[in-house]
Each structure stands twice: as C-alpha cells, then as structure tokens.
Image 1 (cartoon, rainbow, N blue to C red):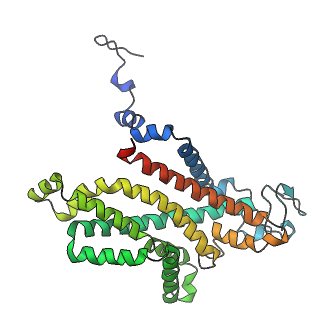
Image 2: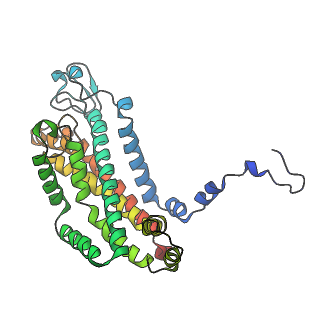
Image 3: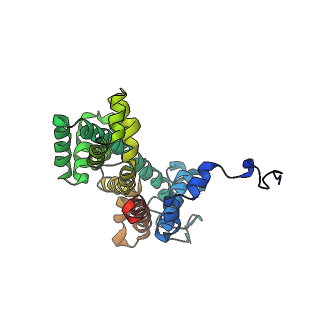
Length: 319
C-alpha cells in the first residue's frame, strides 16, 4: 500500500467512502446490531422475499403448468414419493401440485399486492396529510372528517366495499385480468387515513418553524415548500407506518383471497392456498393448509417486528 511521505497515512483513495462510514456509524445501524429480534426478523423477511422473487429458478416444479400436473401425485404426504415417482418435500395438494412450489409462487403475489397497496396508500395519505396540515381551514376539515369516518370501520370491510363496487363497474370479461389491480386499489384506499393523520400532525408542527417562514419570504412556492422542505422532516413516522402497514396489507390480501374475492385462481396467493387447504384439513391432509399458513404468519410477523424496531430506532426519546 502506498504511503504519503509527509503524513505517513494511506492515501484517501484507499479509505472507505464517506457515505459508507456515516452509514456504518449511524444510530439506526447501531440499534439494529444490538437488536437480535430485528436481525432475525430482517433475515426471515429477506429470505422469504428472495425466495418469492426467484421462485421460477428455485421452485422444484411449475405448479401452474397444466401439462406438468399428474393426478397420481395428489395428496402425497410431506417428504414422500408419489405413486408417479415424484418427490415432494412439503407434500402435494389435491391436484398433484407441489406445496413448496405453490408457496413460492403464491408469496410473489402476496408480496406484490402488499407492497403496491402500501405504496399507494402512503402516496395518497402523505399527499392529503401535507395538504391538510399546511393549508388548514375547510380543506383540512374535509380531509380529516373523511379520515375519521373511514377509521371508524375495520379496514377489511372498507376493502370489501371498494372491491365490490369496482367489480360491479368492471365488465365481467375484464374482471379476472384486473383483479390484482382492483385488489391493490381496495387495500390502498382502505389504509390511507393512518398516513394522512400522522403527516398532518407533523406538517402542522413543521409549518411554524423558521425555515418554512424563510422559504416563504424568499418567494419559494407552496408546492416546493411542501415536498422539498416539509416532507423530508415527516418521513420518519411515515416509514414506520409503511412497514407495519405492509404486514397488515399482506394479511388483508390473504383475508380477501381466503373469502374468495381476491386474486383469481389462475394467480393464487397465500390466502388462496389457505382457502384451498382448509377444505382438506379434517380429512387428514393437514399439510395443504399448514405450510402456507406458517409462511403467511412468518412473513407478517417478521415485517411487523421490523416495523416495531424501526419505530423505536427513529424515536429520539429512546436513544
């Protein structure tokens, strides 16, 4: 390694980048390293997410290819070989589909719907919360009264109502193709109010600070003040709500699919697999229900625990 003759220290090019040093020394990373629960939850979330993302590469079978299905493989017990000679680590269902492969493919749908619905709810709720908290007056009253009314009902009922209205508007021949989009819309509209109320409160605090007054005096536009100055100071609680909301969105999608009003049978999620498995629970084929249910619980619990850790890590009173 080359040494500068005047300083006796390695050259700057060999030192880690500044952003890397700041990230390694940040309070959040320090809190993460000292929290075994957060590390386990992050490992479980990353493992399930990567397994779902690379499902076509790691799944033993393609469970939704009709040409590859064999009814002789049906109801094979876990870690057993079927009558057709195929081995199934987690068993097979009534149609001979590998349960492990269906979980991997079903997790992709559940994660996609949950993430997309959470991002939609976050974008809508944050925008409305910024507007209500900064503008105030009648606009604030209208937005908050709508949020209060919506929060008085369970989110799953709101999602069912929105899903039913959308299905009534969409022509029957287009419903299956638009089912996932409608599901994302329903779950997102059912969960925007939490973001709006939190961002509104933070915005009402930030708008009274000196940097906002200075920006107004300099002639900065209202839109730029909101999204360039106020929004970055409200992102902490928004990220916490988004993390916890992701777990709730995954559970809501599974609930809707379990009730038969979620994703179509050609694109089953974890909720659809649980609905199929409960039909055979009392006939002895427990694994068809058990393994998808365990996957759903593990995914939702891990994401929820990450949200709890992030809430504590971003709370200055707990540092």
